[in-house]
Image (cartoon, rainbow, N blue to C red; front, side, top):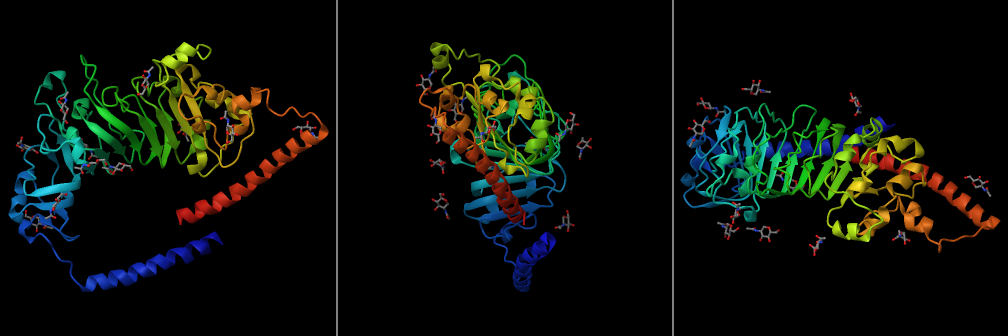
Length: 427
Ligand SMILES: *[C@@H]1O[C@H](CO)[C@@H](O)[C@H](O)[C@H]1NC(C)=O
Ligand SMILES: *[C@@H]1O[C@H](CO)[C@@H](O)[C@H](O)[C@H]1NC(C)=O
Ligand SMILES: *[C@@H]1O[C@H](CO)[C@@H](O)[C@H](O)[C@H]1NC(C)=O
Ligand SMILES: *[C@@H]1O[C@H](CO)[C@@H](O)[C@H](O)[C@H]1NC(C)=O
Ligand SMILES: *[C@@H]1O[C@H](CO)[C@@H](O)[C@H](O)[C@H]1NC(C)=O
Ligand SMILES: *[C@@H]1O[C@H](CO)[C@@H](O)[C@H](O)[C@H]1NC(C)=O
Ligand SMILES: *[C@@H]1O[C@H](CO)[C@@H](O)[C@H](O)[C@H]1NC(C)=O
Ligand SMILES: *[C@@H]1O[C@H](CO)[C@@H](O)[C@H](O)[C@H]1NC(C)=O
Ligand SMILES: *[C@@H]1O[C@H](CO)[C@@H](O)[C@H](O)[C@H]1NC(C)=O
Ligand SMILES: *[C@@H]1O[C@H](CO)[C@@H](O)[C@H](O)[C@H]1NC(C)=O
Ligand SMILES: *[C@@H]1O[C@H](CO)[C@@H](O)[C@H](O)[C@H]1NC(C)=O
């Protein structure tokens, strides 16, 4: 039945596609930058330049356009792997969105072809199909008044599909960077950016707000990725749309300004049930809080981490039952870390739920972030409050039992709806 539905739905857009593509193929697409032949063309309209089949950036000359042109996206795909350096000259165009680079062998730390831009220009740079294989000199002695490596010129950076990181990447590339996002797709167990350890330096003035892990199969989060200099001011980690295999026990030991860690992974249950998740201990490891001491709480009011446990992007639900306690036993309450549990209906107050919520009422930011639809019935204040209904008569108990039954029934109902919703979204 499902298969039939699939074909029914799949055939609809397909036939549309065929109609439109036959229409398109009758008219040849116009090239809006003939001046840039033979290496570049603008078949997607005057705002999009695509260059390939060149062997050196010095073969590209955008001043041939005559007057300076606004370009939304420029894509450069050299025939052979090249180093990104000042031989790329973008004079002649004014970039307004994104530069997309393929087949890059390395980045010259001492040169910056984008030097005239700063983060305020809101531009993005993306890397695809690149094998970072050129060993980078990585020494704090490179830092001087004129040191302005490439990432300080952008607002967001993407390490996209098809990249290899054969050599370690120098954290100094992020010197004075001010990124709203560093995005990584295709993160796997072994293929991921690994950063060099730089000694004798404790800041590179790197301000990356969010690390977004967009996709990956069998992904692993390591200390080599979570570099203390690159991410010295990292606020948010979002692991999205990823099949996560492992987080190393020491992964976050060098990360000290994180405020939120968000799991929207595909294999929520498999990942969390696979180990005792000792990596949790490495979160906020420099912070120690005494919950019974108001001074300690107020001193640390800006130092909390919210771990967002959201199983809803996964194909299975997760109920945080008594059986799951071992998988969360290392949840680092003492490091001022809090759990946000997301579900569509209230969960039962298991040992695990009570443990995860144990200090929830001390969360220094929005209490509603931790007191969710899933948790409010087990929220500490409600349980300990003397105002909590103390009805001991039979009617009261009956109502409680009925409501638990109701919750159980609605679980099944929601599961049903979600599976179908999920199926629909996949289609
Ligand atoms: C690529 O450049 C070579 C010369 O370097 C040329 O012979 C070939 O036709 C070009 N290929 C394409 C697809 O433009
Ligand atoms: C290019 O963009 C700038 C600012 O975004 C705008 O002021 C200018 O008019 C644009 N030029 C053209 C030719 O569209
Ligand atoms: C840039 O790198 C290429 C190798 O990809 C090299 O041949 C060229 O000399 C370099 N240019 C500059 C300005 O350093
Ligand atoms: C960059 O984005 C910020 C915030 O969205 C905006 O205030 C600013 O004007 C933008 N700058 C440019 C050059 O577009
Ligand atoms: C990447 O480059 C290195 C060094 O040139 C090479 O040994 C390795 O095979 C390359 N890897 C891929 C996947 O192309
Ligand atoms: C990185 O992800 C953010 C959030 O989805 C997005 O706004 C930004 O454009 C992405 N940057 C790149 C270079 O893809
Ligand atoms: C960082 O860049 C800004 C401009 O974007 C500049 O004013 C500042 O001096 C730079 N800081 C360092 C430490 O180089
Ligand atoms: C569970 O852990 C084992 C051993 O660390 C690992 O080999 C396996 O891939 C993990 N499975 C998942 C689904 O994460
Ligand atoms: C926390 O941050 C707020 C707002 O930035 C600031 O006013 C306050 O002094 C900070 N508190 C501590 C203890 O650092
Ligand atoms: C938690 O949320 C519930 C439902 O929205 C609300 O009734 C309750 O007062 C909240 N508890 C606290 C301590 O804010
Ligand atoms: C309510 O449920 C509890 C166990 O969940 C059971 O022990 C108790 O007997 C039930 N009470 C009634 C009135 O059904």
